[in-house]
Image (cartoon, rainbow, N blue to C red; front, side, top):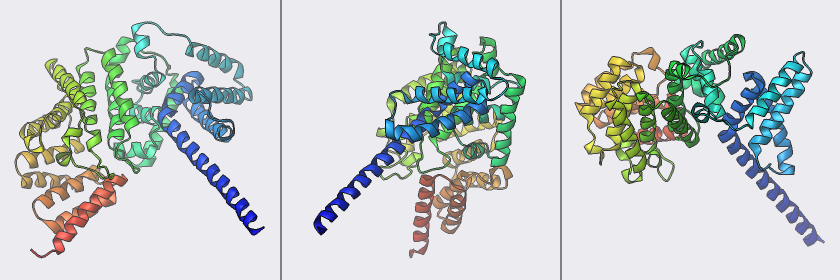
Length: 441
């Protein structure tokens, strides 16, 4: 009897364990779907519903229904279409209870019909993706530049308000207010969700390029979490960069931005070790770099420069090309890189560029000269939360053998870093410095 009871208990426990494992697997798949498809789904809903806030609310309701139904009924063959359809029906139900149902329902039906009709024409083909349409809507000239970028990052890519605020080096509350005001402006001004004309595209290009670049930056160096690289964001930014480059082939800065992203992304497999630790550029295994991306990116940069591009993306891409084409770390042309940073500062000055220039000066001229520049930047209020500044100081101090000062700088960087892999790297370097400081000479 006892043995039978134990057997039943074991079978019951096994079933519970299997159920929990399936539930965990489902939630992991659902999270992956959300991470990879939420931008596409939300962009489509905004087109169908014509309202940012309503689209976001209805998508959340559709997610709630999916979490209730899919574990029992199975994930549909086309989960994206299922979520769009469910959210659209939820919106119609919401509007039916309001005063504007007839007009809005007709608009939604027309938009849904257009959504399945094949598009024709070069512009329509290049801009057929709802996310790209949404980016151009968010980048309307009537919105301030920072609002255009922030709203697109939040809406199209699902980047959190906290992550965006860190990218802009502003408080979270400030960024939240920008997003609220931007959505209100689109609603009040009746900014259309449509494919812009060629003339309008050129007027909005600077904002769109900046959006794509910041999407890539968040993917290339995730501002928080346990992953250094969010590859889906890098891939999305490169995809959008290719569309823009194809749409505006005469715009050298669009070509340069695509080249810049390809060159940075070529190093993705070498930036983190097999054990999940950060690997600095000069320590990376260059055999892991993707040569086809380096070749394509370098050609794009050379073409952009030949066409006279001297913008922020062309200059940064030229720097990236020098790094990517150096056979070894010692072969890096630091004097030319420092000169390019000098040009960047003259035309596109920013605190972050100043930090990068100081590091280039340290490598091209002397560690002491670079450190002096970083020490000056420490007095800048806008860099107070920028963890790479004390991290760069710590590295130069370590190279100069000034161990106690290097340890203090690493501790400071640790208080500011939010990415787990970066924090682990800083802790490891700090431990090495502390060990060396205690060891007898």
